[in-house]
Image 1: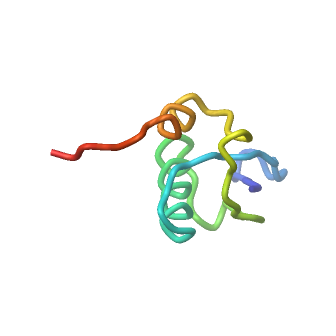
Image 2: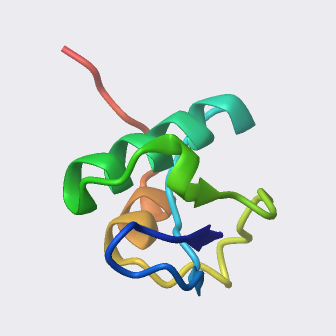
Length: 75
């Protein structure tokens, strides 16, 4: 994923891990997170690749906790 902003016109490469049921849902979540945290518009974000993360490859603590769950109860 690459981001650029008016104040910083160079593209910065980074990786974002999110939990989602579909690729479309993951994209929306990433756009929402970056927009709210860094005040970026969608045209400032270029998503190069979307791929599933294997349980052994996950690095974010909340993703690791979700992967350890056997079941989730929604009330």
